[in-house]
Image 1 (cartoon, rainbow, N blue to C red):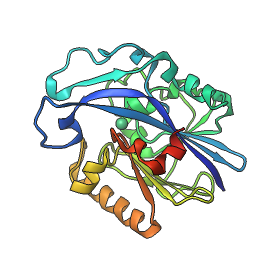
Image 2: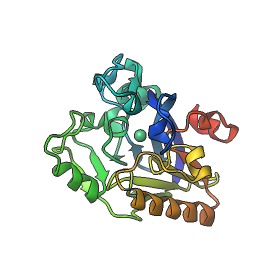
Image 3: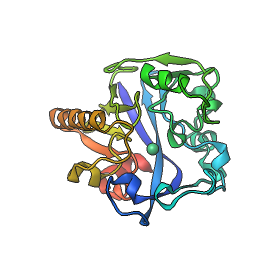
Image 4: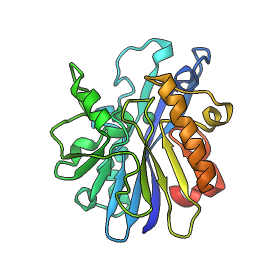
Length: 248
Ligand SMILES: [Zn+2]
């Protein structure tokens, strides 16, 4: 049973809105939150994603010089590193039984290198894409204890992994059924914001057709489960009353 769900703010990022909303004019910069999620089962503690890498701390220029349309500037403090964030929840790195690796991007997998001996659940398509890269980003260590998982796997009762390719090949979203609360659908980066969902406009996708199919699947799941949908990087959603119980 899934007994508790915590949304962990792992810092922020400035990004050009054209990357969130395909076709939006360049030059409109928006500040988006970075999330990880702590899931407490009966006898297991799961962490979904691990925030940004230490190299982003105090370093808005982590990605160097950028064209305006490509602008991504991390806004990360030392206290946003995954070990510090977990410590504020009373959790040590070694208390985490499994890390769910939704995808390999810097704002989701950036702290994964701290989880040396921990099982890291990843979709095989994500690992395969990484192995094909000529040069891995510094936050990716393929020597970690990865275990590949398929669509539909429930690592613990009440937590279901949903393969939602498009943003990246092995991207995963999650359906949560916490005890005593409405089901929650975490889209992660399959859908960045409520605007993307409501206006049916995709954000950054490596494969737009796959991305559309994944969103269609998430819509069907949200309807069938009557799930509350939490988007990967919505600037304002966490302020909504329903979500405040999870973000405190
Ligand atoms: Zn992201």
